[in-house]
Amino acid sequence: MSDPQEIIAEPLTGSCLCGAVTVIMREAHREVDVCHCTMCQKWNGSMYAGIEADDFTLEGEKHIAAYQSSNWAERAFCSKCGSHLWYKFLPTGNRTFLAGMFKLPEGLPIKHQIFIDEKQDWFDIAQDSPRKTGPEIIAEAEAAGFSFD
Image (cartoon, rainbow, N blue to C red; front, side):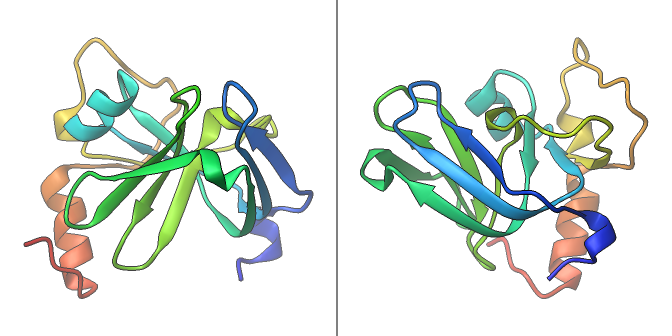
């Protein structure tokens, strides 16, 4: 469980565009993850912004479809409207949910921007945040015992 100072105390409810899938997050982390990798760009049109929670409930599961985009990642979407729902890191099962599904509190910081070396030059985020290249984030994951073969 996260430090109470670092979580959003009230539950957050979000949904896909058509409302067929609802996500209720409890103890959401008080930060947003941003990824600029080329897969996220193809999936979202630019970058991916996600928020993680220690606990969540899914409603409308019959409308959830998932695509394994690599040996280590799954991306889910609503099969009715196509809205993106989450990115799941398969080795741990951790998910980040599409931040845009939720009305988030103001002032949330960006935890970090990853794969910054793959970011399109026409897109910039104004908030100053830690930035890591693809090789840096892969090296950190490998040092933690993950393999990307």
